[in-house]
Length: 297
Image (cartoon, rainbow, N blue to C red):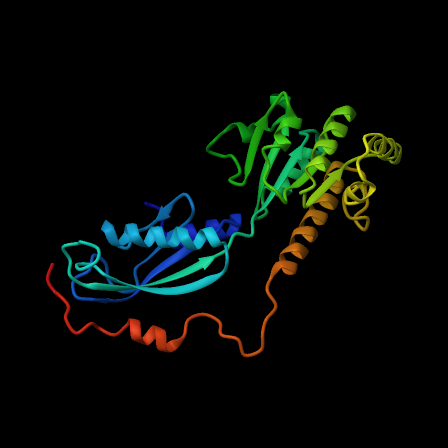
């Protein structure tokens, strides 16, 4: 809990992680912290404090319930420290919960060659989670072997069975296939296609390689509709060039375009005159001081 709540919120937002900002918007009587105190809560951590004790325990529990829904929301809760929470402080606290949903995209990049290295330099700066997979540990740049300098959104996976890694990924994942072995590329694509739940599957390939893969998919009785969802040649056609960084920029642009369009498609349509946020009447009622409050601790 040593991290400042503002720094934590900025970091979590940058990484696309869901989090809740908790604010004491009103206190009466004796309370551990004053009105205006904030903390940030994610699925795995809590940053700063609103005073500890049972109040903070219940607040974290309520925040986790909101995080499980993964929707943008605000709500107010009123806590009586003495009567309901068993704290010696006899005051009350009105707590505002502001939940920010996760927009994190899970990307798995197979291959640590020249293009993979160029691409990871871009992906590591995006609000996504990256799994970088290769069987050759020596191929990964030294910076990723230093835990103090490792990019926060990138996980290195050294595996003799890269195909098995596909089964470990969540639904709606993005897969980028560009290993040093054509047969491995085919097996990876076949495994992803078999899952039928990918958000994106991009394969780096020449025209000849792509035609052969399509024929092999047909022999494996993989439906054409699934294969047609693959991105091959990978990347945006408007971004040309064959140098590793030029190819990487093209692929990164396609990934960004894809997840941004998917995010906008899932946002609920706005209804004219619909309420957003918290009703003023509800807010006003919560801030009223109870008739009897123990002002001593």
